[in-house]
Length: 121
Image 1 (spheres, one colour):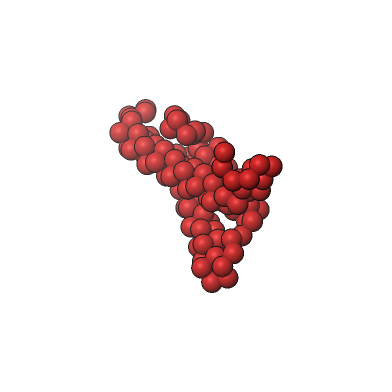
Image 2: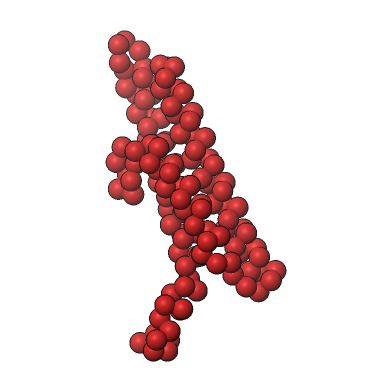
């Protein structure tokens, strides 16, 4: 048994922020990786006699996804600093609500490019 009996939930909640940040990092990384694969695919694939990446709509969609992926990464990085930077200065951690939004943002980016943790498009 870890900790005291009846205190499991409280113990688990002490690591909630860190777990949410870890999931946000994973989600942002998956989005970036799948976007890189998609750019490579569209650069190699030819449709109607021209590269898929040369179509204006494809460029717009890829630019939109890149923007969302960048927002997710930057927001996650700032939340990491906010949580761990404050802990270093104040000696306390932030609660789970402070880091649930970057996780949501990263998952929204994953949804926008139709990818999952499995990496399929």
